[in-house]
Length: 146
Image 1: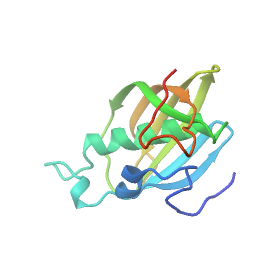
Image 2: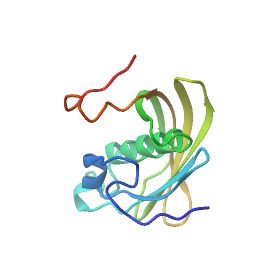
Image 3: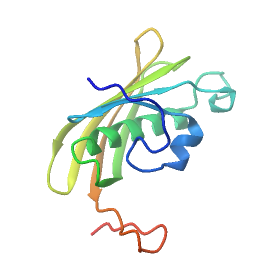
């Protein structure tokens, strides 16, 4: 398993929201991914556990990274995602993703978030569409979903 140090472009591209949240890419290869996330106070809900939106973002990025791990030059966009929250997520969190199946244009994935004690606290399945990255000369924010 390859271990990867933190960098804003380790995912193959800069992802400003991921950088803002502080996700750390640990591994991305062969249809699998692993990310770490240490939530700050601003990521907590009124019960002082990690907010479900932050957990869903971690799962989304974890699954997308697993989907892209077999073809890093290609981007993905989320088509759908189903999330189950099993218990509160506290402390340093680990997201592990797996590419379950892929076609030429679609990726079917799953991801689980584990707490510091290794207990599963949230799980998701997701479908992603592979998209070509725009040419450097293309207008900013161009996404092709053809």
